[in-house]
Length: 66
Image 1 (tube, helix red, strand yellow):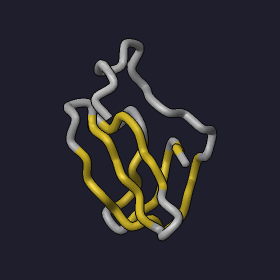
Image 2 (cartoon, one colour):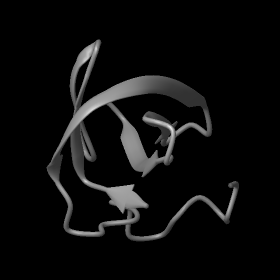
Image 3 (cartoon, helix red, strand yellow):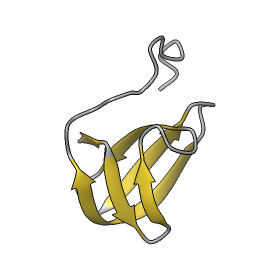
Image 4 (cartoon, one colour):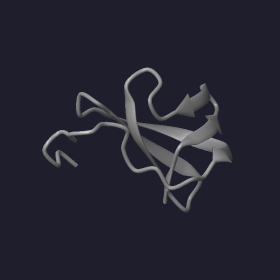
């Protein structure tokens, strides 16, 4: 499930902040955060703060890297 903003162990992670392009929350309580450069990092989700189903913030997405 794609979300816009989560609260994690490392603080608040939000789409459009610090290069985060997408946040994909898994059912086991973890979230995969995709950056604009194509990197992926995983964080543990404490709480979902904004769930408005935003998939990406870029107008011309990076040629479907994911």
